[in-house]
Image 1 (cartoon, rainbow, N blue to C red):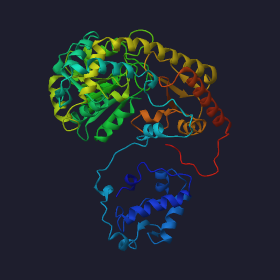
Image 2: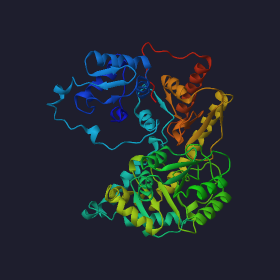
Image 3: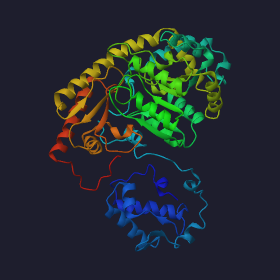
Length: 502
């Protein structure tokens, strides 16, 4: 049994000594049968890493369990579950769920975003981490108005099941919307998704088998890395540089024959870079020559703050190999849970078969309202308004970083999207910086989360879309103080041992 599966999402608190909490958790798994008699437990060093505590704490946990007879420690061999507990567990009728679960492949950063989003380090915590629009501008009032104005036209059957690939009027509306952006497609080539994350998963699900190669750009969206790794793909990373590394991609294509390239060519998450038009055309030519499928993720192209971005890869697709994903979570509100995919009919038909196992179809009432929202011109007006708001917030964050942290950080001014990608110019670990920043009440995402291979990347991502200008300024001020403490070695040392958030 891999004990790491048994302690996923376990949090230690300061209410009691950590070694007692660890011992109690292991004891509970022994008693309920999750850990069987004679099973070898992790070495003290490994246990310490799993719980992110000192080795002494891990040793004390095992000694406590040994004293109570739950484990036996054999010098030179390791720590094993003893037979003492068997009479206690013989009458236990609970299902040992951990034994039934499939192995879960996750990187050390897999739960980072959920940890940050639910953490309550301080009541006035400023979240510069999760990439999401500002809730103050969710167009809830307009959606409510549309529901009131048009609800009389609804037929009771509209609340029943609809085709798996989505509400037909919305699919036609999306084809018209995309036509204005140079993407020519038929409604049969569009499937409505419960967010573009679902499309990413479904595409990988129908294309990737364990051992297949997938190419990504580094750094890239954490959710894509997790999906590919969870399906057993071998991930090849294109290095981070100013131009798109076409020659390295071609080498990968010749040597490994990957099935798929995943990319965010417009305002990439996390670094905001944009692939230029020439590179896009050359990429399409290269992909066509090697019959490489491209999964183009496009959540941010509508949020440009300078020039209109280049045409999408899908608009240049002359070989039918580009799968285009987009979402309304970033441009409207995440709770809408609607995105869409445009792809070759053969892939769409396979996606539909796979989607029916997941949710039959996405929420039809949300699709109906979204269709009205677009047709009545609200989407175009919303984008114009939000581009102005987010442009100003970007400028405020960039000015604040230049004023207080210019010598300590390097960054490029993003031309669109939600993020400023920062590189630390000094020997300061982003993980340690995050721990100190959380004590100050501000959070960000360490750069390590956006790479497929683990490593100490001296980078981190800040999001400027979530908060107004005043809060952004306060957040950067707190970040500046946290960096200052680390530079001076003035760490905030708690009275008790603190478990890092990552």
